[in-house]
Every structure is written in C-alpha cells, then in structure tokens.
Image 1 (cartoon, rainbow, N blue to C red):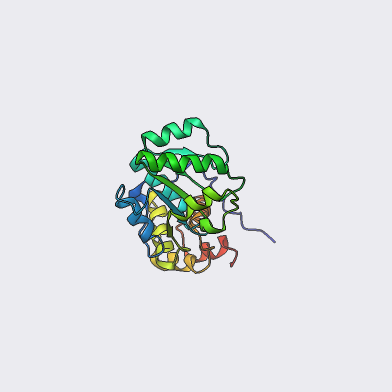
Image 2 (spheres, rainbow, N blue to C red):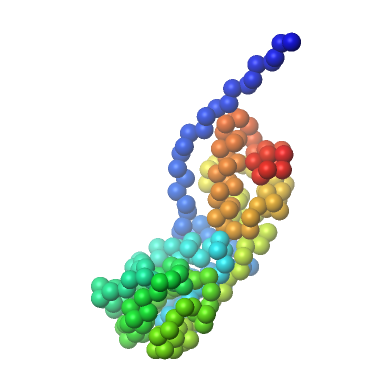
Length: 225
C-alpha cells in the first residue's frame, strides 16, 4: 500500500502583533458605552475620582489605556502609593488599574484621593468589584470611595465581540467571512482577552496551512472539529 505524501505545512513566523490600545481602536458596544462616554467627555466628569467596574475581560484595561493616551495620566500600582505619586496627582491625572486587587495601600490611596480633590485633577481606577466591597478598613478611605463616581461595564455581547474579532483580523490584513465570525462568537469565551487569543490561533493555523480562515478551520481550532 502506497501512502500519499503529506502536504508540508508552513511554519508561521512569530510576528508580534502589538495590542491596539488607543481610543480609535475601541469598538463601540452597548456594554462599554458608559465608559466610552467617560473618555470622550474628559475632563467634564461627574466627580474627581471615577471607578470603572466590570468583570475580567470586559475591556477595562483597554479603556484605561485609551484614557491614559488621551490625557497623559501617570500610572500607579495600588500596592504602593508614595510621596512622588502625590506630587504627580497635584500636576495631572492619575490611573490605577486593578485597584481592588489586594494588598491595597489604604493610607496611600486616601492621601492620593485628597491630593486629586484639592488640586482639581482626576483619578481613574478600574476594578472587578464596586468600591463598597473592596477589602478596605480605613474609615476615612471608605468615606472617600463612597464619594467616587462608579461607571459599570458588562461582559461583551455578541455585537461587540463580532466587531472586535473583525477589527483584530483587519489589523492583520486578514479578511474573514461574517458567517465565520458569528460561528466563532457563539463558541468562544466571552471576553476581549479571549478574542485576541482566538484571532492569534486562527491566524497562525491559516498561515501554517496557507489557507483562508473557514468555518471548518475555526471548528478545528476551537476544538469542535
């Protein structure tokens, strides 16, 4: 019995695709419209301190990065807020991503909020939970956080995920049929992080086989083939 020769596969080059984090790269969707409005109306905010709350993969970090690009905000870690951070807060806006991730420098955050309020600058925090349930014991900080404006975003819906997938493929100059996009949306984890990972896997598989990204390929890559 003669076996047919196996078709050689192309080894895809490991070309790094830098995540797009500008305001123009944010795909509008119902779940993130309140946060987009926050970016677009800066500095006309409802309060000096704003907390964007949403589940993992909802796009909080991307939104924060887009706001930082627009404003030139300094980025701080919630675990260590020193005197230099207070100086920054007196001169311009501040960003703290994952603000509810312990351990929280409660004294530092309290003084940071005070510096922002007294200087007329702004502080943007992102978190998975509302400030009311953060692991905070300092009463004065609890009071300051209660005065913050909270903007909630939800998990991405089908329309947003489809738009994000389409844009991510377009960034790679890859054209994918909308039917395939919808097939992927219905079967992927519902997060923007997952969208990036799925696009990477599908693009690599298509390059290896020198083929288009089809529903059959998507089924195989997503474990349904």
